[in-house]
Structure formats: structure tokens, C-alpha cells
Length: 333
Image (cartoon, rainbow, N blue to C red; front, side):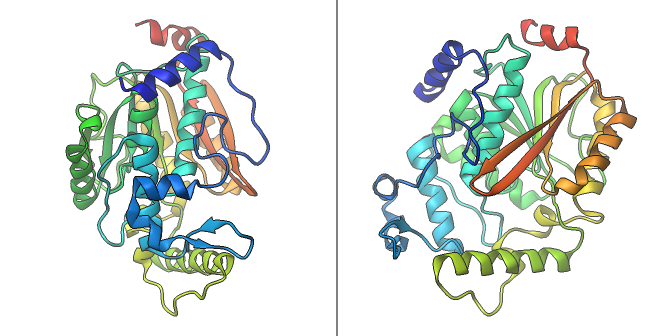
């Protein structure tokens, strides 16, 4: 386990209670709370420096509508906070916002702590399944470097898996921490990925939330327009869908709710293989349908965990088929 993981482990043992939420702020353990330290980041990754500018308020920032600048920011964050020397993605693939991705993992760690006598479980005995890891492999990177967790990472896109594997092979700190499995059937999520003898402490997923290519293109255009407006710079006249991700990363037939319903349905088949199944839910209006699907599936325990970054509120839903006794005994095995 690296020094960062050991530090988190020690803090988790001292602070056995789950930390309280602070309105509008990231998780208390999230290192990305507050403004970006661009001095630290440009020292870690000098390539970022030409993209940093001073705002009218005297603060430093980048143009978040510029995909090159955003990718360089991610490279710097991963170097400065997660010991990652090499990170890159193919042109047009999803470039994730690291602070929000880290928040999901920190709140997930708190959820695991509830089944571990209030202590966040750390180290290689903890294993998660990342559904749709993407070319960026961001959840396994952050989770392995923060808590020492191991991962199985799955995806339907062979180029995404090739990119993620390249990242792992290029960084010594990721050696032996992440294994990859390709989902060969676009209609399946857990089937053909989870094997009968697998034992996962959690699954996580950022599902495709648009229902069509047209909807995804419109969403990407709105995103860039808003980011350009915030930076005071003009948006590009035309925007390719590739700015924010490939098709499978952004949309599927039926959208988020159809994808999550299928996930819930398949999770029944692996009820004893996993302590907590989880997924992000981007649209609050989808929650009633998710709860109904979980009730029909026979989930024993269902939790909704809200997260916030400024005015933006996100959430993930977690469910388990294990009884209270089985959950308490999970980490003693």
C-alpha cells in the first residue's frame, strides 16, 4: 500500500464515524475541495501552464470548454494527487471531472464503513467492479491510490479497454491493482462479466444518461456553451459529439432509466457475489422508477447518497440483497 493509502487508513481508524456532510461542498476527505492550486498543478505538469489564465477577479483558471486544457488539467491532478505519471485518452473519448468522480468513491467508502464497524476498509482485500470503465479508467485509478482497493474494470468498447490497460501498464503504482474484462453483449451489464466465484465489495457505474445520439449531441453543445459563457470566451460554432465522449459513454436506447433497470434485474443473479451494488443517477426524476425496480427485485437494503459541488447536486443509489447479519459478517470472511 502506498503512503497515501496508509494515511487514509490511519485517519479512517481514528475517525470511525462517517464524517458529516457540508452543504455545497465535496466530501471532507476529497483533496479537491476549494479552488484548484494551479501553482502546484503546473509544477507537477508544466504542459498545463500555457492554458492557465487570470480571471477578471484575479483568480487563475482554464477554459473548461477547451478539451485540450481539460485533459491537461486531469493529467496534472493525477500526477499531483494520485502518483500517476502517465495518463492519456484517445481523441474524442470522455474526459471526466476528477473532483466529482473522487466524491463518489469517498461516499462509497463511507457506505462500506457502515458494514465494517465504522471503519473505512482499505487495502487489496477490498475489490470493486467498475461497469463501463471507459478509456480514462478514472474510478479504479482514484480508488486504488486513495484506499488501496483492487478492481475489475469492464467495458464494451475494445478501444476503451486498450487505452485503460495502457494507462495501467505505464504506471508502476497501478501494477496488479486493476484487471480488465470485456462485455461482449451490449444487452448485458453484469452477465458475462461477473463470474460465479467472484466476490465484490461494491460495484459502481456512471451510466449513459441520454436516450439518443441527437439528445447526446444537444447535451454536449449545451455543456460547451455554458462553460464558454462561464469563462467569458466564445463557444465553437460547431461541436462534435466527441468533445464529451463516445456514443456508448453518453447514450443508449431508453436512456439512463432503461440501463439502470437492466442493471438491477441482472444484479439479482449475483445477489451473493456483492455487498453493495451502486450506480450514479443523473436525473432525480428517475428515482421513483429506480426504487420501484429495486422493490420488484427484492433488494433488502436501499440507500440514496447525495453529493454536492457548489450548486450542482448529484447522487448514487446503492442496494444490497444481503441480510443485516450477512452485511455485518462480510468483512470478517
